[in-house]
Length: 334
Image 1 (cartoon, one colour):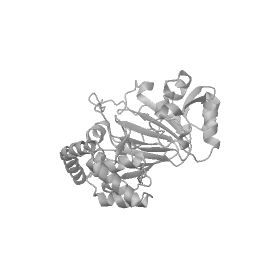
Image 2: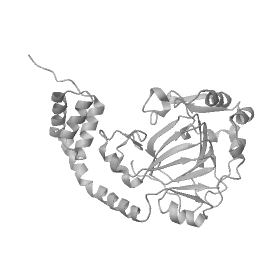
Image 3: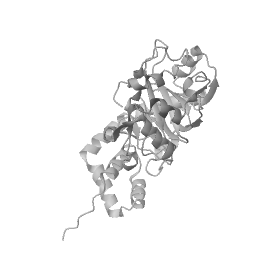
């Protein structure tokens, strides 16, 4: 009689291969698999099969050859520790020259205060926006709660509706992550919202006055919306107009500790990281802040960030800057 070993889910097979390639001892993987409900014989068989597979041997060879890159990142991280690069500063009235030298080209995040004090947008209310722009058709992402991978399966979540109806949902729906107006919805490009966009003033000296809708994004959502840990392929100035957002940041040089997936996303839940499954994340540097209304957060290109809205929230971001050498975009494969 032949005994069939139960199959391990593809997600766990990927996890086994990834951690073996990273050098995690097989016995450590066995312990985690058993805690997850996989019997010892099945777990051991999967680990042994992975170690013996020629595809995995090639994978391990590539992982070993990239070790020098991780060593370089470690050194860079140590140097940034020495010059204060693992702290998140809050600054008021930073001159443009200092911003570009110390933060933009220094590849260092910073919370900037006072940039939006003259914005008419700071007086927005949901009721006022609904009265003025409620008839405009917009697009939002819905059904997010039912899809853990909504971040990169975004096309299946696009939902058109009136701006007024969406604002009512945000106002009355309570705390939820099920719907959110995000940058991919590209609502700033809609002519019906041009008067609303005009009430956002590019921060003088940092963002050019002739920014176009393509240079900006609009995020509106209820308390409870979560943007999973990810990085952007460009520098971002995130301006908080309404409500507060809890932000966690991980430096670009800790990429090998965040277990990348789906291009620019991470396997790690930055709110409650599972260090048994993702042990290297424990060594990552995590900077943390609550972004208040009127504050702006500069997020350097490829810095990982996780964001949770603590209140009903409106955020405007810019990704074009005034410095002639500031058009920095990541073009290599993520």
